Image (tube, rainbow, N blue to C red):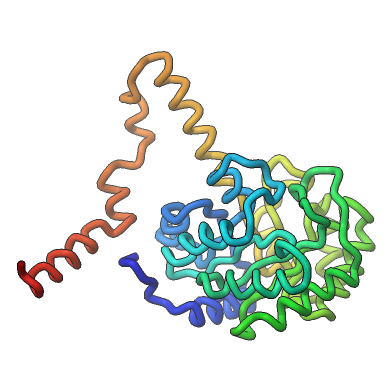
Length: 299
């Protein structure tokens, strides 16, 4: 990517809308720009930017919304603008009340995202697969969603409503909230932390709109494949922290060996080479552009 995306934000927004109609879109979690670029190079047609990935990876904080909206938008923009494929970002609770939600939506849209999801937890939020969560009222979430719809500049910018009700109030209330959120203007529903394949299937039967599934590891949801989610009727499947967790484990192993042996040489077969990184980042394109500008305007 040479400083700017080939595809405009409007094109990415439209592409995401088209994709979720055509197929189940599998979105790996990208916690920085090179990971997003690698996902695109491998063939993924959209990426997901996890709030936990940004917060954990940038500041070393737990996923309890300790970074503000401006910080999150800035980090997400680096990723979204490094790729030509659409990106959806976790916008947590919208970072405040109705007017702040409107500002949040506009900020993420201007930053190059194709959509966001907003959740119905009380602030400070918690990871969706942890206990101890509390929810705002249905009416308050409806107001937030209506504000989000009102605030977006492009009517196709995707507003996904996430409900954490399954872990707090039960499956039926999760369904009821999903239906209410659709009426309030949400384009898609993200039922967090469902407990079984059967629950995912029943949810899709009752809430017949585009649905997002979270296939996170070590959580409440059983491990289901993308093809299983397709059969169940889900439009989007995110793997928010998979790459982050693998990266952290690999780095831990390297550091332990480096501490003992004082050398990283044995890890060379497991490393991305310098040239592979340069190819991914388009290093030669930058050099070419620099040379062309120097030739056009000689000293």
